[in-house]
Length: 154
Image (cartoon, rainbow, N blue to C red; front, top):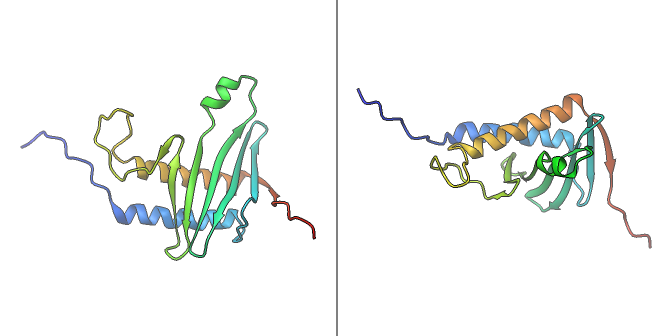
């Protein structure tokens, strides 16, 4: 019997299912309409808010950011605890995928562990699962306000 630990293997069907759930949740929060510059803010508690901003809209995809906004007295603590993600919505595939989280861009499906930045072997799956939790919290506990981009008057 070998005691060698098996290497992590990404499970594409699980990741795609998670991305499909995230897409559905994101569309609910965006009220199925996206306009570049629109910001939806969700108040969860007095010192905890989330903001979803529409960054880009094309025929088949949209790009949104979601960030946690907290009100703290210490600027250092605020910077430390303010997660931010960039999410690409693929309308034709009906999937939403985290493309950037914190300072990590182009999250790989698998990382060798340990690694220099201490990413988990299943970092991509974990980040998308975290997005799902964020979206669910906004839907179940959030009170929303919408700020539309200003339209120049003619």
